[in-house]
Amino acid sequence: MTAPRRRLPVVTRLRVAGDDGEKPERKTQHTPTPKRDANRWQELNNFIDITMRDLTPAQTAVWLVLFRDERKSVSKSAQTDIARRCGVSRESVSRAIAELERRGLIQTLHQGGLNQGLSWYRVTALNKG
Picture: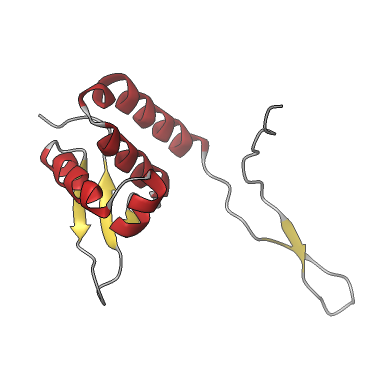
């Protein structure tokens, strides 16, 4: 039995109480723009076709988690959370992040930690240089 296909988010409308008893509608969700979606698909394709073959399974998993978590060009994640989702140790995530940075596939914008919040990363698909 196959799993049902997941649908893209749709703009939904909520009715809000008005003066006349009628409930006007308003937007509640943002629908992704086709251009941004196309760019993200192209970036993912580039990663799979060009970059992924040179990475370890842990490095690939970490990159994919960070890519998936990316919002407004920044991925905010804790290494322990990445490790849990990838099925590897936190130390493996730390080594993978260091290697991905060395290869130019991610950039650490803010190093998180205890009482410092989440780490922030910028993810790219192709090696620079």
